[in-house]
Image (cartoon, rainbow, N blue to C red; front, side, top):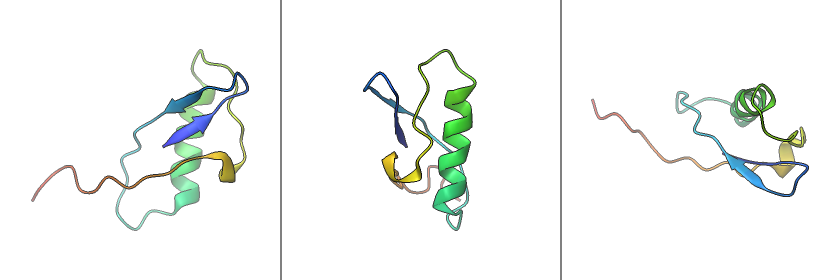
Length: 60
């Protein structure tokens, strides 16, 4: 997931979640991780995030 910050840069976060997780929950997980870090504030608007599903990283 990429979040756009007030400095114009995109910060990318990997969020581990079940396949049926809501996109909003993924967004807030990444946003809170970013907000607690040292980076410039990210926009908290859901429609500014780029969310990409990369599939199951662990094969059963």
